Length: 273
Ligand code: DGL
Image (cartoon, rainbow, N blue to C red):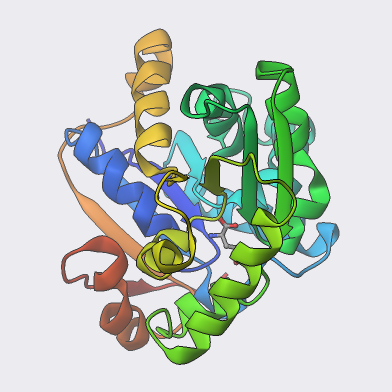
């Protein structure tokens, strides 16, 4: 069988936190990661720009023979996924699939909350799209959802400043903002794949009884279920346990920084879109 990896896309490094859990859940498959580091962050950009960039990256992954692409980026999932699924896929190739990270997370978030009050921390793009509010309402209509946009968090993570004094200031600011919306919030969702790198900082400012939820394992479990339910998609994905990493920016920079997200050293390849 020729290589047909599962494509994993993010604006930068953040998707590696999701890919790590996917690879650990489904190690048998081939994976091709694409980080659009040259144009990251996406979170503060317009709908048109995020859609255009994401579609370009998805098409690139399709050209590399990815039959299934995961948008391991909440911003791209919020702003571009639906249009790509409904408008573009039928003309590009109706047999290919693109999945996001918002729906699988919304499907389980209610299981983590006792009080029924959950907080969503995301980029401005994700928060303004209201995607989580709408998806969670469909799955758990009884939940009350609070949101907070944290526009500085992705730049802090992308610039390896997640452990600095600057991070203290911006992490505390947004944690205080969301928790001040309701005393009953008992679950905070990291609705951005970059944010798990800030989790230790967050714990300094969050009460012990509040659960901080990362998406990686949730998305990985959901993908495993999806492939079980869709053997016609699973059989198009090759299984030789290869992992390749592509970046639209400097490979030196990618390789120097990616290990904190991935847990191991990475040798990336440069691509021009
Ligand atoms: N990892 C992306 C997300 O999950 C970050 C978005 C950005 O590039 O701002 O939203």
